[in-house]
Amino acid sequence: MGSFSAGHHVLGAALVLSTFIVHAYEYTAGALKIVHPFAVVSTPGATTGAAFIERIENSLAQRDRLVRVSSPIASKVLLHQHETTSSGVMKMREVAYISVEGGANTDVGKSSGYHLMLHELRKPLVAGDRIAATLYFELAGPVEVAFVVAPATSESAINPHQHKH
Image (cartoon, rainbow, N blue to C red):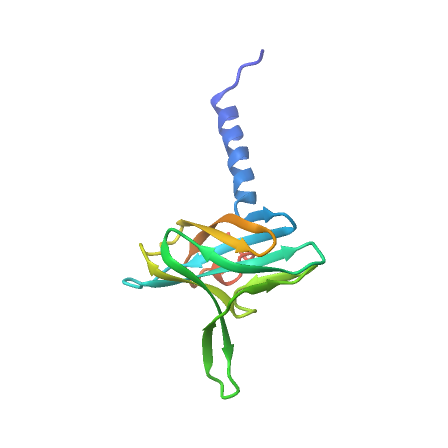
């Protein structure tokens, strides 16, 4: 048997960690893939926060719907959409579900206007924290995820695939 040096242990740990990091932002539930769920740092004293999902991929032909979200960090999580009225005023409203069309990708973020509102936060949203949550889909059922908290101005919050190194 060969011997393992400390370097081998470090390399092994790095490989395990890099595997975790690659998969940390993707979750699968049947035909759905949830890609990069993230929340934005809350302001001091805030009782609400916002969370987003870069993309929900649906590989089936049949539509599914995100119907509810729960998280131990908030008393309730509401599905919201913001839209601009004909007079140029941005309005936010609660929606009953977010449709995830069959054979398509749905973003719960800036381009769609959809987002998740975390109400009655039990603690502040701090950069780097991971927020446990359960997404409830009409067909796929519940999916356990973690929203990574990012600064509102960070590239990962604005565009999660444009990391600066």
